[in-house]
Length: 465
Image 1 (cartoon, rainbow, N blue to C red):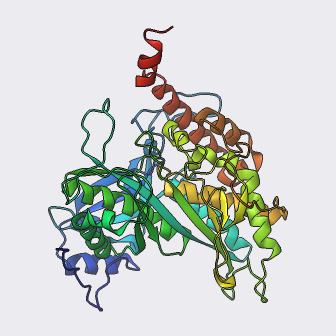
Image 2: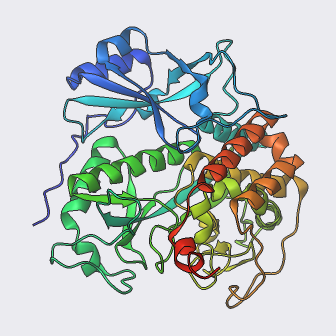
Image 3: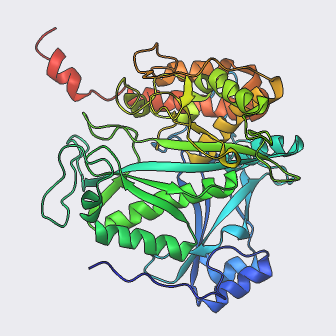
């Protein structure tokens, strides 16, 4: 039997306050002992410190080494080169809480809160390579033009059996029927019901944190799920994806399984994406700039698409950040292989869903679910912004399947990094420091990957060459 949902009292603020004094009162009213002060790093991993609530109230800002933004996914650091240098002193930066993100940690064994922080240099400048600050900079570009971008992410993930030996392939977990999934179960309610207790916990954890789930569906792969979020402000939605990933992992662990956001965790199964629905509204009147008063698409709508077509290949390493990410991009695999666009066409990289004029939007289907949500949303919006300010025109929309058309996206991480580094227009938006740092991190991760010998090599090369 599904657990009864906990109701939130109307007068209670579940998520977010407006000031330090309100935060102190909020924490005291709930009897919370500890608080996790977190910041998303370049991989989207939560870094930071845990401290007693009283210490946080007495001094909410804290220092932390700036090198947290230089770590690779393996915890290593890139080597210095011509454009990238690690701070030899490993100096501190300042983390300042964003009180609008304050909420409880519902899975913690002791009463605990969490709050997302922003990173600043000691002189007050934003840390230009911090992912949350990068996304804020892109959003501000739109604001300077009188626009506000709106996004709605969709996050796919797999449930898998616990796997303590990375040499063994991942397997679907056992559901309540006592059997593991096989075959394709797209949109199956019965397949979701196999994990009712897990999803009850996910909903309870989300409600406790003030996170809003729009829909939950079963995707095509074995024990592959998708959670769709309500549309809204890009930074707020990136925060929600950041917290949702952690929430889903924690809920899965409670049920003796893993939730993974790897782009391609299981061979011969579809990959996992993070689709991003995007629109832009006028700040003054809230109207969707993609639609004319008569409901027809605007020049800005087509220019936004054209910007994505031109520049998405150059930000591919932000949308598909690991070697594994490129295993997802295969023909006829529910993943795009190019940046063509079309109306209600799921075979292209840029899909325009059927909608009313007020909801006209562009769905970017290129990003994988392993991407840092702050960086993926920043990259996608930056591409659309360049199309808008340059008045670009897109190709004609594709009718029918685009899978047989030429690849228009990089096939591997190094190719993607090279395209990223050479694009001056994007460097102007992201800043030279971010581009150099991110490039160095991705190259270092690739070198680490190259030290590993795969089962394919042992199977086909060991005795045949």
